[in-house]
Length: 93
Image 1 (cartoon, one colour):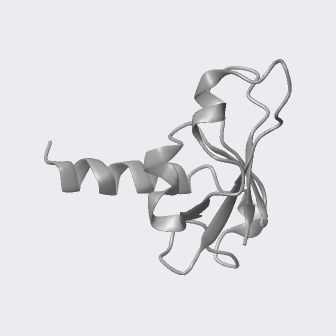
Image 2: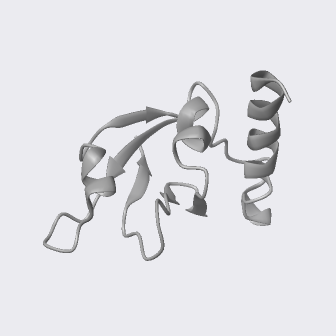
């Protein structure tokens, strides 16, 4: 599968995770969607979560490739699920 086909397939798959009540009313993965990365920074924060800087801006078109196990919570919040029990999230900018 080409990289373009794989990217399209991953975006289509991510759209299946949008709660039914939000489908068609809110976008998450477009160029106009911007997200702010947040991490709970304490003694339990792993290196993977620390590698993303608190407050980093992520364009919606890159969200799924950066966080393939994401979970949309509501129209303004996405859990990134970098690993089991991950406490990090994205907030709509």
